[in-house]
Image 1 (cartoon, one colour):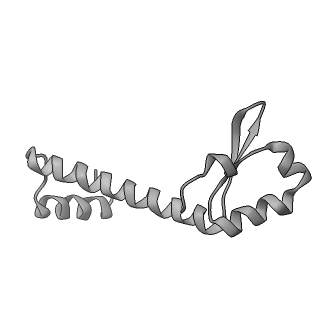
Image 2: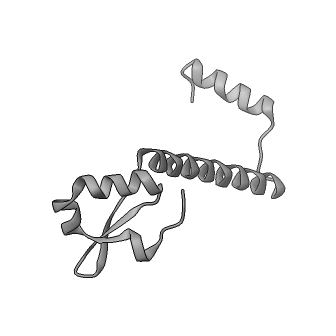
Length: 98
């Protein structure tokens, strides 16, 4: 997603109310988000579907990377369980045992 250009991409929320098509067109044409303001403060962001989907994918990758990092840290600290122990526990659970 292209970087926000404050000089072009900050718009009062009234623009969205009165010029909806223009705001949507700006987002689609530039690929940049539009920040809607009210009384000089940002209140919402309008994104293209593609930019929103990219953000979701990035967040999912970051969450996955944090999980991997935490697992690697646990392993380095000696906090792990043998495969055979996990397998035995899963078999007990499948049989309804605690």
